[in-house]
Each structure stands twice: as C-alpha cells, then as structure tokens.
Length: 188
Image 1 (cartoon, rainbow, N blue to C red):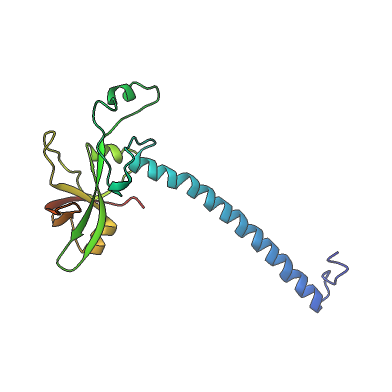
Image 2 (image 1 turned 135 degrees about the vertical axis):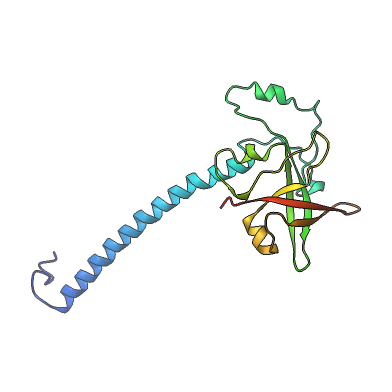
C-alpha cells in the first residue's frame, strides 16, 4: 500500500505524509506501552505504602461525631491475643488518632496526630526515616513528648530535628502540648 502511495523511493507530498503518519503511530504505541507500565507500577507501589503506614486491617469504632479522631475500643470489646493467634497475622499494634493544630511563630497547620505503641512497627517494610531517630516511649499510660513528623510538614513549618513543636489538641477545652521533634520521615 505504501508503494502505491508513492513511498517507494519517490518524493512526493503523499510519501512524506505516510512517513509522518507511520512515525506518529509508532510513537503513540510506545507512549501507550510506557503509560500502561507506569500505571501497573503505581497500582503495586501505592497500596504497599498504605499498608506499611496503616496496616492491612484496622479495627476501629465507628463514631461519626469524632470526625478524624479514633474512638477508644475497650480491652474487653476486642481481644488482641485472639487476633494474634489468627493464622497469617504477622503483628498487631494499637494506635489512636487525635485532631491537632501544629503552630509555629509564623505558620500553623491542621494535622491528624497518630499515637502508636511502636512507630518502628509501622515502618517495618520501608526505610521512611530520613533523619533523626524513632521516639522513645515512656511506661504505659504516660505520653511520650517525642514525635516524628513528615519532611513535608517540616518544610511547611520550617522545623528540623531537635526543635520544639507546639501542638494544640482540638477538644473542649483545647489543650496545648509542646513536643520534641526527634525524627523526620518521608513516605512519598
């Protein structure tokens, strides 16, 4: 067909158009293959990052009145030991979320502040810790005033490892807490 249109060695307007069309089709096929490969990669990478940060399964109390905060589940309502005994369960960790405002002298940012029993457990598969260290926890029932923050929040508020960060917990009445930044993480 290309020979009949004048591509076989003759230079004409139609032969140039056929070459351009052939090149455009080849480029489109390459772009489609590349796009599909990228999409497949994202479909694997994004769920893995979410699993690392929040796990495969969460047991939370549904309480729409609390918004972004998690409601407490009493120990008699959910047996962690029975969950640990389920075949295939690798680990079980408790966490809580609290709405807060992180404030510096020049900026502020609304955040959902997660509290967890072991931050290393949440970062077990990936090397998200970019600088500093993991917080050290106090005995059960006593809050640790050491926190990890994301590199993104660090840039927004102009904070680094070692800085104090005033947090205002959103509750009635609001409660202020100054925490020490001991590490920065980036999950991408």
